[in-house]
Image (tube, rainbow, N blue to C red):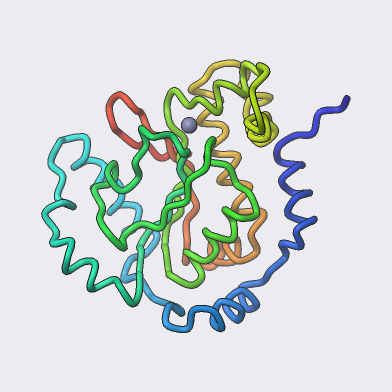
Length: 231
Ligand SMILES: [Zn+2]
């Protein structure tokens, strides 16, 4: 049987679900649903948003967290009616990659989507489009991590129970590209998913072109706690 690459599969899925929404129609439909959240504007640029994330990760690796110093009661009250997260992160569901903690952030700061293998699916794209077009996130990190079970299982291509294997076609293009080295495949997968997001979403590709959003691949090292941006 001919193998279908994850990228081809995802594109086909996107077409099947009619995922050809434009920025205007997205904003229009969300306007009806969530009028109070429309067009919140972060004071950040894509570069300062990335710097803020990386500074938070430096505090995390140095053991100098500041997010917990903030008054959670005040933060909750302040964000009850609206949110203005400055960044979005698509992370693996892995319990060892807690996004807010590793970037030293608190309530209302990061728009987080998580799925095993940090995959781009229509639902994840819709979520990230909402974060960027409505809430004003300036940078989107697609973050893989060391020792990722989803990537490892795809490389090994073993029999797995239930629908776990549904993850594999998405990750297979990275295996095809980088072979059996877990770190190399994980980094390739983060880059492929980031590229897929840029290409598949008319909303986000438009915002990237106009300089309002950056989409970057990143890699989280479990042992050291450090996040590196992948070029
Ligand atoms: Zn993982």
